[in-house]
Image (spheres, rainbow, N blue to C red):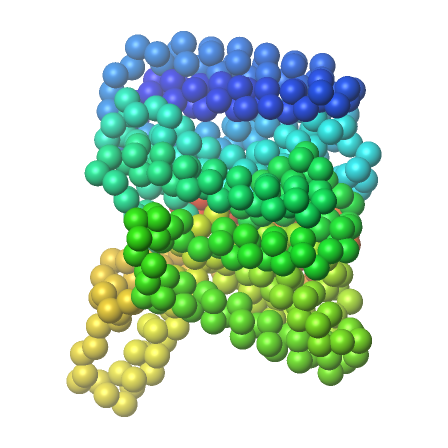
Length: 483
């Protein structure tokens, strides 16, 4: 393990975070908010700390191998949340550092869970930072790092593969830095379109930016206490629904779309399954809401059911309705969707649609082998066989995530939380959803959670965002010894 290389790259990451805070400082100065000094101090601390770490390892020319790549991603994410918490803490928006760290980790991992009880009372600079770290974390701070530092060469591939969500990290261009750059260009372009549409629909440029950051990153932080529901606008709801669906789609598909291959979406089995899950869930919930008389018209039921289904399955977590008050059948569907998540290679969290598809097909083949033991049939996705090592990796991932969910739920219950709050607080953070049910429902927040619970849920967030392994290996002593 080459520690100097790790120090050097993590130092650059922290400097990048400090530079990113300058946008929030601009908004604070422009809007004459009281948090400008806190933001300036945070920038200085980030630049100084990152500079020191870089100085420790700047002479290192060692290649970035698999271990170094995983260490930079794992340690880097834990530290960017630490430094990203400074504006919340120094401004007084989160007087306790554990709360500031929770909020920052929730932002960077695009979870959207919050400890803030009165969002609109917070200074605008800090609120912009809160939303902007969503956007940075959505496509990936390390992917951005790879895109702007092409000198990483082959080492960039290790970093890229350690951070991009999904069982595989598709490389679209010959050089991984070009792939990272292409993904960010697509991300920025789609974001710009959403900002324009929300601005034309009556949101201020500031609010349009913040809600776009939350949408495209599938994060869900809003500048309003009532989230998107504050606007009471069907057109705003529809716009955000469309862009949440886009954000939950594999960004690699857009690369092919922009090259003129318009049929790529419909050929992609994962995307078809993703849309099928969304449409089927909306139909079931609309029927349930109408049957129980929750809404007076079909139009209302479709509008609110569609928004919440898409917000949950893409792990965005925006709210236009308090689904804590919906019938149990609708709540259970949303709970199931929390595990599904978006497509691989999207900004969405959760288990990922492709893994669910592989598990469903694997189970089907298992049933078939019971009565046809001599038939050998390959598991295929989109006509391509899924190799055994990838199937094994998916099975290992599922065992780990279920185990972590059970252990963390037991811990939260031991802190005195009721069953539904304990379990859904873990589901909401481990799958990067945002809201859960009961005490952590869409109309509530995580402020009342004991400090020990906030630290654990912060760990759940980064475990979910990095899909377990880049964080779990940090706790294995053998990982840090030799090569």
